[in-house]
Image (cartoon, rainbow, N blue to C red; front, side):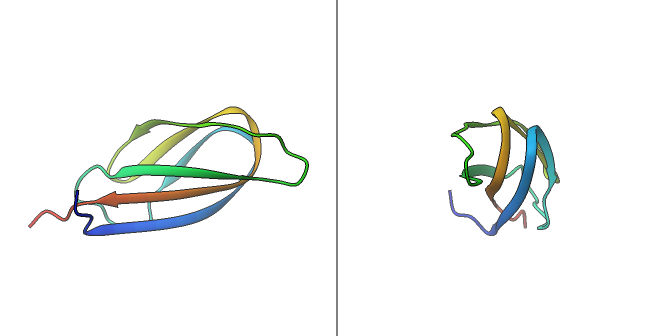
Length: 80
């Protein structure tokens, strides 16, 4: 997939097991979303699950209560 619209963010998360994030970019189609976790000091590992995605928002589930940073990338195509 050729990505016309790309955005990346580093989002601070404090003791959450689910978050909903609004995209900053305007996506014409539902974006492909990837995540990476940067645990806080003394925090264990966790896994993320993209629960749902729309053109404006994404729901992210963590396997455990998570504190640290969520690195979120979203890629989509522009519709002419």
